[in-house]
Length: 205
Image 1 (spheres, rainbow, N blue to C red):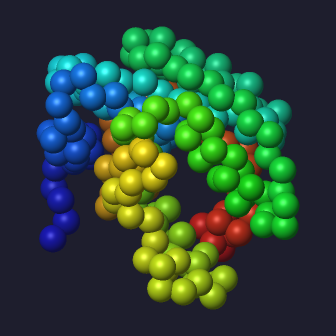
Image 2 (cartoon, rainbow, N blue to C red; image 1 turned 180 degrees about the vertical axis):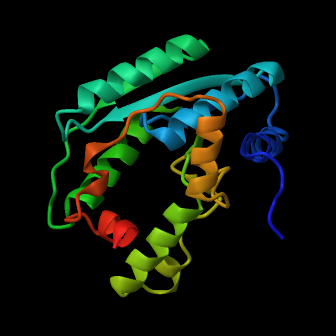
């Protein structure tokens, strides 16, 4: 049965549920790319975390792979300033070594998370149901085994960090409707329509 609540109510309820077990003083980070999904996540988490006494920070990994990278950094800084959330901008060098640019960028991103966050910190990612489907299809096309086909977990422990995807069961269309509902500003990644990337090809074709 479809959820009849307004999109923002759906998303805020999931944030409240994910924050509920956290004790005051716990340090929570949001991975902020500057796109719609992560900008929306940070903007909705900020007041809820503050009310619960959770220490909130954002981390932006600057891959430096496109001319628009500086625009994304500027947007993240402006959003975090408006929300009074401290931001760490981490520049990385992406070096494909036989695994392709997308995989190399992901590897560099997670290395930045590990280097920036402290053991015991929690990291929230804004990935959603459409991302999960694309991940499954990519794994299937690449002949992945059972582990690969399981997709992204809602919660995982990795290198002393707790990684949560609170909106993993929510569609991209719901996120966009919620962003429009609250008049959110975000950056559109110009590479999202570049069909030479496997994930983009699956998404659009």
